[in-house]
Every structure is written in C-alpha cells, then in structure tokens.
Length: 65
Image (tube, rainbow, N blue to C red):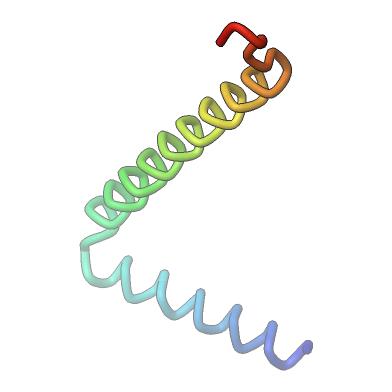
C-alpha cells in the first residue's frame, strides 16, 4: 500500500509540474472551479429533494387526499 501511495504522490507531483510548465494553470484552475461549482449545485438540489421527501413522509396525506 505504501508503494501505491508513493506512486500516486509522484503522479500528482508530475501532473502539477506539467501544468505549471504548460502555462495553463489558470485555465485548469478555472475548469476545476467550474466543475466543483456544478457538483455543489447538484448536491444542493439532491439535498433539497431529500428534505422534501422527508417532509412528505412526515406528513402523509390524510384519508381525504
């Protein structure tokens, strides 16, 4: 497991090195931020839906519904 972790760390270092040398660091950061923003929005929507489902389950429709 330690060898795998070391290989992963080396890969991460090499990726960062290549990004820095390419001059695309800003563009890559913007892409990552956009991706994270979309993921957060999706997670918020999912949490809202789950909360609404919980509320519906807490207050089931009566016999007249």
